[in-house]
Image (cartoon, rainbow, N blue to C red):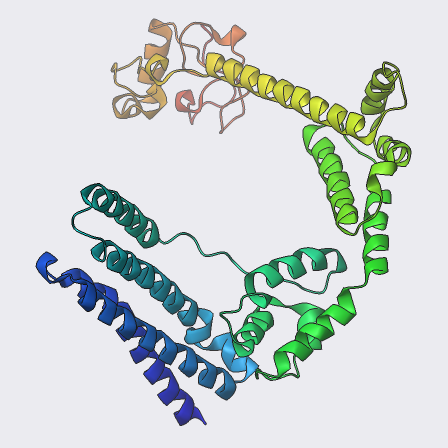
Length: 408
């Protein structure tokens, strides 16, 4: 089985490589050799190679197990989807070229327009628009509608895909409980309809969907803080639930009174006060549209206020932050170097007596060795590490611990 799978993958890699080389070789043709028959021939070759890729892909699917499909690079890197993109882009370019070459040479204006159109289309197709990612469904009931609609539009209703390919896409799109439901069905042509029907019977329950969305709406938590994020979460959660209920054909448009009441009960105290003032200005009972517009206006107002406060704080920080050019470097009072006197090698090389004499002569504080104040005014909490008295450690006499160095 392993040898058979390896041979199938090798053959598929050869098919995909040949498919990719069609466009590369076409671009190598000299302009004089680009004729309608030659381009049409390459288009037929391209179609044949793509057909071989699809047939080989079906064989690979039938040979592999779900575990293989989770680990093999062929599936993990979506080689077949990449090949499909290459086929579509190359086919479009070749078809445009055939159409352009088939035009009458006497119709110059039409030829010019076709040239421009072909160039634009070629650039468009070769730009490789991002691939639309298939939705994922884990079995969460509130996600079912979105998943079903997306999967049906992209895969289930795509007539160019075989049921085997559709089943492959379905298996890779479901996780969790939904994946367990169809895990025992192998990827075969006949099993796709059964797998899709199993999911529909389990999750496509209109009554359950309606109750789930109503529960999600009615049990929204009360706002804890009066900030933009909480207001936006409330507004968007309500709008999302109502959109889902409307898609389920529920008469949401007639629920204004209930919607306004439930939504307003989720407000924080300040927002509720603002809403009470606002609703008194309506001639009639407020509608859901009114309360939604109120939330949007309040979100915008608080967003502007938050941005303004951030700008004010930033301005204050910039104003008080010292500039690099304004920072005064330490100037050594002993040698005038760019360092503190405490790190001056020349000062440290002196004796304790010499350091004390220099400090007194230059009116330095004997406790911190800085200028501008004397010992009595020194605010430093540091003291001599040897005797804990009020003089600097560098001025400590080892043979005299009973008296301080004479004060300034």
